Image (cartoon, rainbow, N blue to C red):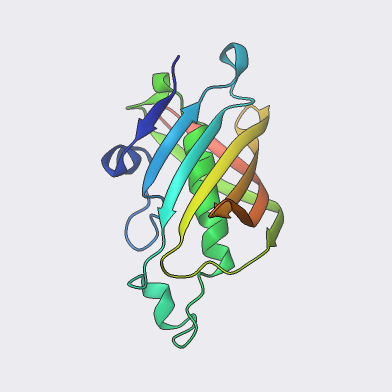
Length: 156
């Protein structure tokens, strides 16, 4: 399997999120795990942060900062896409964050930033995955998290 990318329409065909909670604009790269395993699979995603995002009206009008919880959600969405292989496209796909093992916020994300999110599957426990994610702006780490995600692929 080769690296492949998703545009916004392909992302919408997989993730159930819609405005204002679809937080990934593009998947830049998907790398499969080794030997057909999902462990080691990676996704690199792009989030363009604009001043027109609805959360900036209240967080904070005079000093707009992207809420940390939305950074974690964006990382979770990228992590979900790391779980999807080319063979899974077109199948019913559900993923939920079951637990946030850790989350660190290192510097604010503000309008005009392009956030590059890298996610990698560290453990595959059947329907549960441990996913490590980082978010960077201009090559500098702004946030990182380790998530436990429940993933259901196929008819439920």
